[in-house]
Image (cartoon, rainbow, N blue to C red; front, side, top):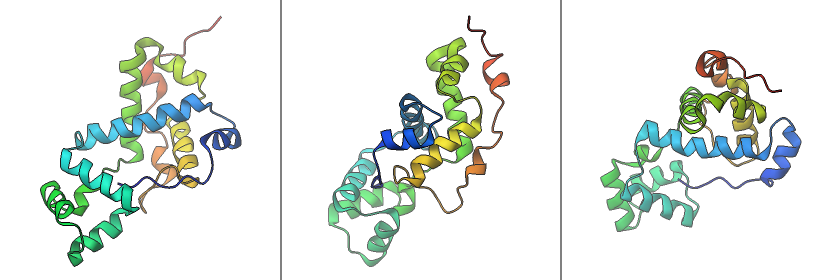
Amino acid sequence: MPRPQPEKPIETIVREVGRYPLAAFAFVQECIGLASERVHGPVSPPEEAVGRWMNQHDVDLAELADRWERGELPPDIAEALRKVGGPAKMNRHVTGQQLCLAIRDIARERWGLMARAVLARWGIERTEDIGTIVFALVDNGWLQKQPTDSISDFDHVFSFHEAFGPSPRLT
């Protein structure tokens, strides 16, 4: 799937949002890919080939579907897309809830008992913080969203206290 064209550098977005460091944005971006893999499985070689072609030709999913319907794709891309199961199968979107749950799981796996402290150091203390980061990236062309996506999808997905335990006391 082609990557959206960012409107401004990530550092500018971080400065404008002003609540989270660059590391928080990088972690959320990394987790989007990992969440997609957890929800949809690993990217297959045919998906990779179609995705590369889409990026090279600046084709989004809607245009891919139109070209597929009109029979206007190069034969190798049409064949790869057939193997994938059609244009709709190229959409590896994850919902806000799926992303939050993946971030929870990845943070636990990566940092164990320190997960809550690491996230808190970055200002991520509620699932709504994840939504703020995601929608800052969406609003500035770093990510795409589906028409049904809303920042409210990130509201109260889970309790950080229940997911990670009480906040560690830092002395």
